[in-house]
Length: 117
Image (cartoon, rainbow, N blue to C red; front, side):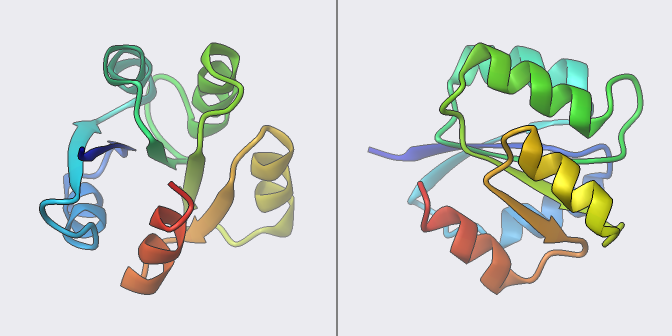
């Protein structure tokens, strides 16, 4: 059975970059372009892992993370950020993120995260 992956990222280019690092055939990938759409898709798809951008319009990544963890406290969520500020990383982890990956993500970082599914 394929594992479900949700990518919540406002940049189409970044969604494509993340998706290209996910092995074909093993995963079913869903994409959302902001936090509100991501929350709805999370409810509909019950993903095995979610990749979530920090900076997005409407609902930012931190608030989206908080809401997703409220829906499923065991959800595996990997935050993506171009800001390597230790306080942002600490905040994401304190909200329940599994990992924080710097953008642009390296294939090895995505593979490492997927090994947690």
